Image 1: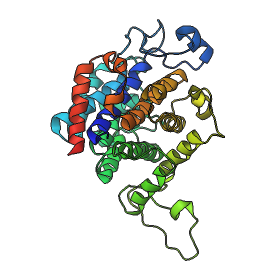
Image 2: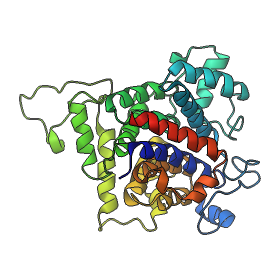
Image 3: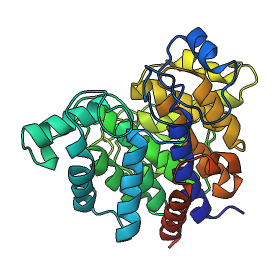
Image 4: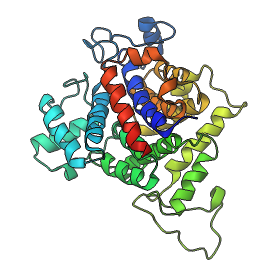
Length: 357
């Protein structure tokens, strides 16, 4: 039996491995160009090519999103809990002084739109942290919040609340925060041992109806329409629609339906879209994690080999896959090839211990 501690650690390390695996082949939207640069199948960490994203960095290093995950991981482990002020202080002191508001600047070789927006509002406009969220529709906040989903997996209400508050630091679009929160609610459920299957969304919707998750339950069980005279369901939190919680089970059902095949599986990037936006990224991650529920390596490598914004796809997939198999089942070569793996494994295990309490 896989423990919650092992699943929580596996989720965080899985996310970091996915991030680092994409460092070399990141941002190739021309798949023929990707194959020419890295061959027919990328199976391990690689160096970025000269002149490409992350040029000058080395195989196994983390990009800026990965570094932010580690920053939050250190903060939570050192405090034993999530302290927003401690995390934001670290960003103010450890990241923002190295940025200038342009994309190709700062640790990790690239700064996402949401972090550039946050930098400009926080550093240049002197706004406080409650005023710097931007409208980027990317997964940057969802990836960072993986640490919180892992830490609070046993408490779905706390996980959802803290994840949504944390995502709102850099995201002001309610739909993006809702999807980011839903992804981490799914991740927390997997860490608790729930399978990523066609029943998971029903379980999450039951938590909505109990008032545990901050979504609005519009329909009855199994999406049955409301009957005349039925009252408007009570709202639990600020998110009006529960649809972001329904996506995972539909995707999982498709992944296991013998009449629906994406072959090879890396072509999921073409089916759902290669770009950065969260509505492209989450379905692909759910699909790969559901299809390869017991095979971490296949899940993350198909995420990488799909090209485009494969760094976010692999990070999100890696967390879901790592939560399902646990840290002990992640291939050793991926752990040993990850820069700073000794510290990262130690921090992730300590986070897992906190999660199991």
